Structure formats: C-alpha cells, structure tokens
Image (cartoon, rainbow over all chains, first blue to last red; front, side, top):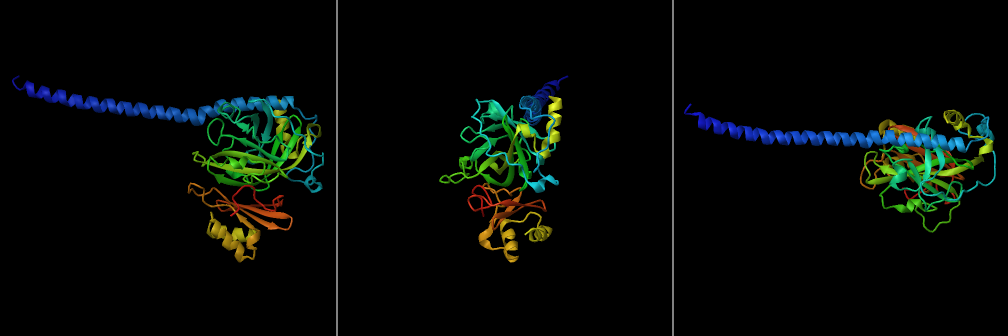
Length: 264
Length: 90
C-alpha cells in the first residue's frame, strides 16, 4: 500500500517508453506497407493498365490497316526456302506525314521479344504517350521509310515494360513496322549505352552531326540498367525492305497478324 | 571470328573489350577492320553484352556475346564504311 507510489512511477515511465517505440514501430510498418504498395503499383498495376490500352490500340490499328486477305506471306522473311530468292522489290518506301500528337500511326512486331510481341507506335514521347500506349516517336526524327532516323522511346520497366528485353536483340534480328502504307522490315545491328543527355543518338545519322543520311534507320531508346534510369540504351536497326499492305505481311509475322485480326 | 569468340567465352563467359580485341588480333583479324563495343557503361556498370563488327569487303561480320553465348550474322557494310551505328566503335 505504502510503496505504491514509486511502483506507479516506474509503470508510467515504462508504458511511455513502450508507447513511443510502439508508435515508431507502427509508423515504420505503415511506411513499409505503403512502399510495397507503391512498388506493386509501379511495376505491376501500371503494366496491367498499360497492357490493356496497348492491346486495344494494336487490335484497332490492325483492324483498320488490314492487309489483303487471305494473308499471303511475302518471300524474303527470316528463314526458309523463300529467303534464298530475296525480298520482292516494291520500289521506294512511302513516307507518311507526321501524325498528330498522341495518334497511333503503326504497330511494331519484334519476334525476339516473343512470338506474340506487338506494340502500338504513337506520336510523341511525353508521359501521356509512354505511360499508356508505350512506344512514342520523337517528333524531331523521320517517319518510317525516310532516309534518316526514325526514333522511338519506351519504358524499360513499368507501364507495360515495352522495351524490357531490348538488351537481348542480336545482330540480324528483324523488327517489323506496320503502318497504313505497309510493312517496313528493319534489321538490328548494334546497341550502345549513353548518358541521358546524349540526344545526338537521334540525329539523322546518329552521333554524326555533319553526315547526310544514306540509310533509313530505326532507333529504339530506353532506360539502362533494367531497374534504373541513370543511362540510356540505344538499339540501332537499318531498313532492309518494305512491302505494301496489299502484298500481305512478311512471313515471320503472318500467323501473328492473322491471330490479331481474328481477335479484332 | 566465331570460332575465336567461342573459344574465348569458354574461359571468360563475359569477356572485356580488351580480351576480345586480343583474341581476334591473335587470330589474324586486322586491327583497322575491327569494332568492339564497350564492356563498361558510362557510369561504370558492366555492359549486358559486348558486340563485335569486322569489316570484310562489302560486308560486316557481326557478333554478339552475352552470358557465354555467341550469336553472329553477316550484314551489309554501312554507308559510313563502318559496321556499327552510333559512337561506340572501340
């Protein structure tokens, strides 16, 4: 009874200490949960959302820019006996006018990234394009088929991770661009890693300001390393051939395109 | 070239630019026909892959080395007379 005072003091001090640690602990747990939720949103949910938008855009574009049916495979694709004959010659490739900002003007197919890989190509490299449609054309660069540099940007991670596997391209890989005019087949050559301020990779002849372009290039740009953004990875390809929609798609993507048209 | 690279990656799955250069020069590839990408990035990271281009007349013998695997292709030489686009020619 008499000694109740001091005991009571120790008890209050102890509970105050427990209370401070408890609050701090709960704050840390809450912060951790919020961080996990953010990571989940950033790496997973943005991918789900962007993936849905991109699939819809691809289906819509393929439905509207429909090659002649049935889909004949044009000789000269990646492999097979037709390749010996070489690609058919359809003359100089047409060059479309620059699209309106945010407009989807094509679809890109990159078999190295997966048998079903296709993504819309849209105008502009603002976050409104890259966070939804995925791949955006730098407006200062050319359109497909023109001499010079047709350059597009895309996220390496998040928002569909459209260029997550850019580092797996190997020399000779084909990249196919479908527009309202036809199919442009590019052949990958090499990559380089640069700092973000190196905008000279977008020049008509990349990194060579004085040169006059003789080739039609496709340049893909994304972040490097895969889970960072302190650098940029640049993948260069050269136009190999083109064919109008009326000639059907290149053999390597014919079945993929047929499936997309059925879905559409 | 492919044989030289295949032999090299057996002992060094992710060779450096210098190792690749030495291996190819040893096999008789002329130095002035050779382009090799950097094995280190501008911020000091290890490159995911290293690429090689060897100019041979009107074509380029291209190779790509990543994780001990060598892929190769023969492509036309560029209008610039080089095999690589961009600024990383080694």
